[in-house]
Length: 176
Image 1 (cartoon, helix red, strand yellow):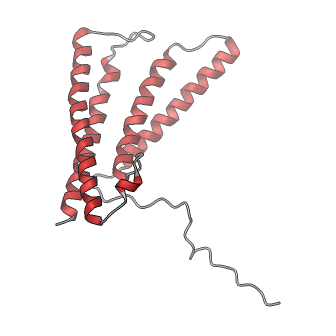
Image 2 (cartoon, helix red, strand yellow; image 1 turned 60 degrees about the vertical axis):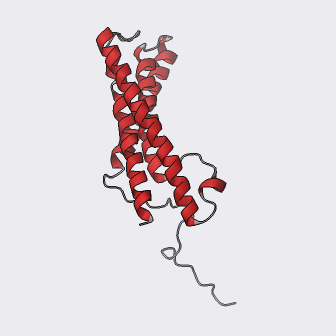
Image 3 (tube, helix red, strand yellow; image 1 turned 90 degrees about the vertical axis):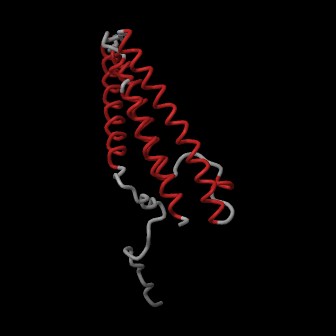
């Protein structure tokens, strides 16, 4: 029986290889690193709280506040890169079906609606953070001003808005 040829592993592509990032003016590394750092910090804080609670029957009061803040940052930063990579949940029959021109029009419509939503959200979150600054609200567990947490929401929402504006611009220019 002849020897079976061994396939060259370098010639095969891995089935789980993610597609390349779309071209952007500003790299998605900012959002990726912010996501990784938020998740890592959240895991460490939560683990420390679990260990302390297990060993002493007490817990760190501040972990819940910081965890909620980190979850919001994680959601916004991961959401920003998911928009650009088109990894959000969508109805593929509508988004990927039909002619390329129809797909482009559908992408412009959905990206435009999301752009308007996040532009409005940026304004409202900015007003909320400003109100918290003016009212002098403090957090219940740590006692720090709540605007320390909420000031990041309009900033991250503005990042998503700018990413969506770039997507609309690229999709609009793709047909020309």
